[in-house]
Image 1: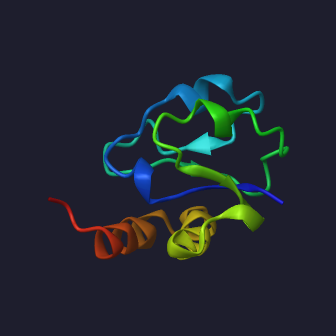
Image 2: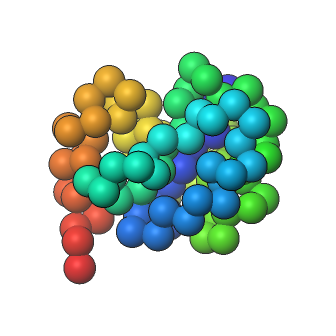
Length: 97
């Protein structure tokens, strides 16, 4: 299991979750091209430290991602294979205002 960051993080990128993560598995904070943060599925230790501190309630255990945000699970995984393609997918799912 891993944790998934979903749509409410887009264009917010609050770093509180990054600050509390004991294994530094949350990415996207340093790149201005990333509109959201992503949790590395192989590095996450399932400690849940990030979930309660998220100010926009964007972080969920993978099996608890609400159905209306289910499309963000593969987006989270894909970021670590193809960041550029994932950025395009984020823009497609939630166009910039």
